[in-house]
Length: 399
Image (cartoon, rainbow, N blue to C red; front, top):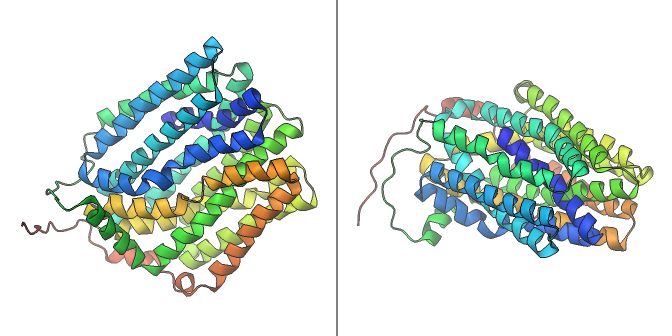
């Protein structure tokens, strides 16, 4: 959590730094695009890598590279030589490291948590992320207000907490593996087929492609709109932290919600609640926009917990990296386009029109989710009670 707070404090610092250096919302959108683009480029490969290489080693490598990247930004800002090109490169490589770290982390979770407890464990992960969302924006905004390099200094120091915890954990991050000499394409296809054969998981991944696009676009739009309406970096951080506080409340309520609502109700409700951002079109105040985002903040942790928890639970351990990388890559491939599209729209359209377009996308998705048979016939979490606590080891054929 401490490591993620440090790294996510840079998430708000990136667009603020670009706006300070270039005064261009479109360029701020490009940086946001490149920071998330690695999911589309490397997500599939990350699944194969983390199913073949030691997951702990992959995660440690990612932490070390993050330290070096953030240190380069700190040095450049301190010397007064920070450039837009350097910000682009650092954002892209940092995003790439996160892809491999995250897929390895999901596989590690699968190795230490029984299948029946994975939705609850995923909710705990959402609580951690909500805590980060509560603290990191305020910290990043406040540090940026003190000096442009300070959020990135926090981002350079914080991976030390992650490194320390990874080195201290003795539980294996994967079961003993047999060598798999099949081509990478064949291994990836196996994970893709597993996901695609399950309509609910397939449809969720496709729906989330567009919800992530709209959400990331709204986040950048919020920062730009707040700047235009005269808010300081600290005030912007505090408002985003309010979103995180609601998300933390939603994380705490997630196990309770999971017991009372079906997976279909959770997925459909989460999409309709996001349409509340239409309120900004009626009253284009940044405070109205954050208030309209509260319902989605309260429900996000639950929909993420049940979908991710169910997917990880029903996936065989040897396919964990590949299946989850395929699902997350499909779900997140639209995310890079969100900041890019929002930045371009904010340069050509009004803030009101930009939010109207993004909300319109969310409304279409909510209607689709309400009608699609794959969501209407969603599985239940009760199915996880029938899964074995451990999987039998099945020898693989040689030759």
